[in-house]
Length: 284
Image (cartoon, rainbow, N blue to C red):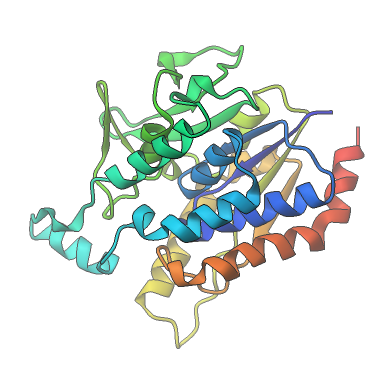
């Protein structure tokens, strides 16, 4: 029985996925294929090239400012700058590309195609033609429509492309493409992971925080992002064998102060659901 896992986007909360992977490993559950979108792809990419969940956790703590950028102004300010036709609302995302290329090179890997530990699937969206593309080391046997699958791309460029969140990062240029965050069309790539020959696929997403009278504009923005992401991913979630939903208690998109708690949320939630996950894996 082959088990795959699909990790959703969610900003800095994505470190919770490392907690999920750690809990699965602690319970002897082996992952045979992995997929991820946006921040979920950052975790998936590091895991697929050979970093342990603990390594990933420490890397995020060490490089979090490089990943999200230092001195980031609130997203609302960035949107305002865009409306004024100012470029200060965008970051190019080069820090992400350089960092993850460096981390991949340390494992002897340059391109996505060099990954051998397990199949990996990373969605991104070309804003020029509105189509989804998948960065992968293994093209599924199903029809590769409009050359949907891309293998000849560096790990850093692929992860930069899928995590280029609108109004925070510029589109990522690659050949004739202009890529933005994969969550625009596929926030939890269950179907792509299943297409890698998996018998069962576990999906991991984030709970949309409740809104109260005390909620601020960022709370509302985060709930909107989560609701949109989960709505976009309805078909993928239906195709999963189990959906593990992580509650991260109003963690902001770029709230690096909550890395520790998000990692713990992922680990603890998985442990609470581990008995059912084991049952799902054993079912025929």
